[in-house]
Length: 540
Image (cartoon, rainbow, N blue to C red):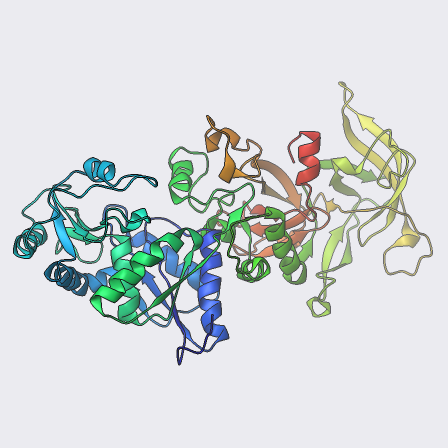
């Protein structure tokens, strides 16, 4: 892209503030800011706020927060509404050149007369209005003399053009609604295709980077610049991000929120940047993901597992290791002294020696994961079983001596013995193949753990079968909440702190978390288990 035609590169990220940004926007942000950084240029943040009915300052604030969180800072903050005056004047220029006219047809009539891909369109009966009449009517449109939809301003290009976007596209429509920045100053608002290129030109954008579906818009982008004789910004297209098990439509995402499928825009199952942040994704992992998928000129679908790999790779280096039990089974070490508690040294992060160690309490009564015990184990089962031995992480080797059941036959407790000579770090020569995690019952804190999974059961949400709706594939197991027990070192952590629950996955302290009621979100499992889950047709 750096062809040497420009002394410096200036890109822009131009979101419409009508919703929250998602991971597809994150790719565009990384591309625009990354390209400018690579070639010593700058990037503007420009809000495409040309539709007052759908836009809100709430979305403006969230977009700025997301861009900064991803690690980028813009050179200038602009709004399409900053340019309403010159855009209006340029529309008048097009009228005076005989290249624009006021049309009284309805939206349906305009659509019908536009023709089809194989049939040319028909000229509007108002296409040959005089320049004076068009200018007079456009002025009255601006002054509020007409109601919504009563008139539009159209470019006069070619109703037989093979590119249907060139068939006299609409430049302005009437909308009597208060704008979040300009108030009630305007009641006519420019269309995206008209405002976009001219805004780029005003800012002297050198590389206007758009997704691939805008390649057919490029001739119109160039037509306006040519006819107005303004700075020749240039549009470049790249493939948009399509991700398995995910939808990227703002409209559909809003529908999920309104219909209660999710708790809000920042629900950790949502592909929104704020949702991913709350779930525990890091800006570094998203930037790594954008770098891995690169820039393509053809649409393709990226596996969600690549995004999950990126966050695992990042959190593996930064997340402190802690122990938590999500489905507790009590064990009593019958030969361990009653009333005794000892501090066990536990490694904070094996990937970072400077992270050091922590003390975690160990005593006679512990919780282990229920699925770490099997009464009738198969061959090569290396966790706990009757008469079998296993090492407790950082602690001792224990042996299961007795299984305690209730009246209905459910296992409620295990009685074990421990070998006091096998404490980790003691130099003991005894070895066992299995190691499991645990927490001390008297010292454990209850915690709410939210186990998130893919929002949809269908991988290719961009190719839903005819007669089906995307909500038909909503994953009912996308959220499972469990009451867990966690070690004392997990108490009082601030929101969005990243940790690894050993052997379970990466988790993040949720925004709802309090000192007395900690809440953890599962960011991602330690391994990609979805393929196996699908094969077994069970929840994860």
